[in-house]
Length: 289
Image (tube, rainbow, N blue to C red; front, side):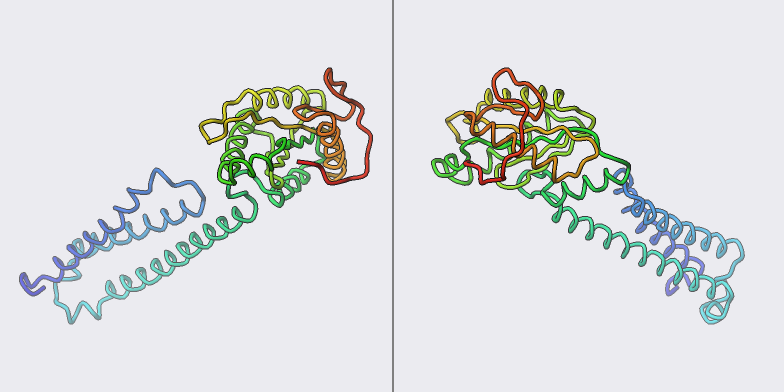
């Protein structure tokens, strides 16, 4: 305006710079758009760029800016320019606020439902995931409880840092041996719970036995532990029953595995070649770690 005395040129330069400022971040994040709210934010950004481009075409095509600043301020083009900018600016702000809010809620939900050490579901997250599955109909599968044998001795002899690394390593091992349809949770301390969907007690027994053998054969020296780690498993098949009942029966089976010498798998109503079978309910009691 000051050098060339051209309002049209000033508008063109400003609009071109505006397009660059909006398109650059859009280009940077384009490959990382996942959630619907992210796509909505990108769509609003594209609308803003289109508005700027159309406005520029109108200025150059109709010569709206050629009469000088005074007349431009009273033109219909200036009115629609400010109106569209205000509407799109408000829309972008609302979508951006929604995006930040959804991300924040997702972060809080993850903190509430996931164990920060192992990144597995925690007890609350496991219960919520089971409740969501129940909305689709009665549950069918098996409940598995895995408990590390003598874990307190690991913490006492090697420190809690080593104990934490053992928990992380065991969590990774469980992920490798479980299916995508399985739910895995750190239910508390050194106890893990797995819901194996559509797996009867016999199938869950065989898979748990394979996991048990892998745990016992693992080398833990890279985490600072120079002794073998073993785990005991309790299994209960379920078909539409209350989740608490299934966990109680699996817990009873785990108690039998612990009392029978540890490093074994016990499943209700499944004959084990190396352990007890046909688990019957016992009064719940504190298990020795």
